Length: 149
Image (cartoon, rainbow, N blue to C red):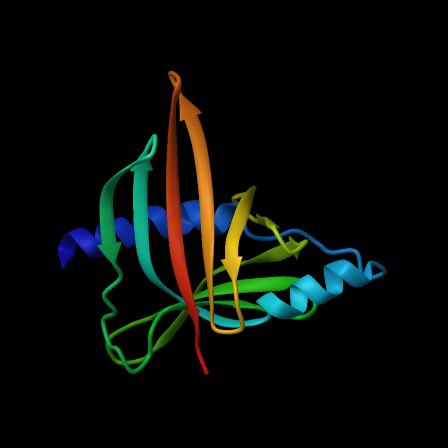
């Protein structure tokens, strides 16, 4: 359990760095894509790859399953990450802006910015990917999210 919390604390900020930037309100395609991402999303699983080999899978365990941590994407192009404790007390960890074009998610917040690929999205789930190549090896993190009601 302690390992999962450490992984969450390390990976969530990395994922959020690239999630948000102001969006162009005049682009209908951007509006439609943003609307499909709008809502509260819970990170349920993280997979880590070295090249094409899956090297680790982490299932996110919540402190209290009745009130999970979540990222909320708002229709105005802003987002926030909410950390819920065991007593369902809310702590807003990150605030920022985002642009989602249907495939790429660009985020900006106080500590930086990032660009991620959304490899799959439906009304109830999406998969976010981040890749980095180092010394000729591509490392990829895939994060799985489900929509909260």
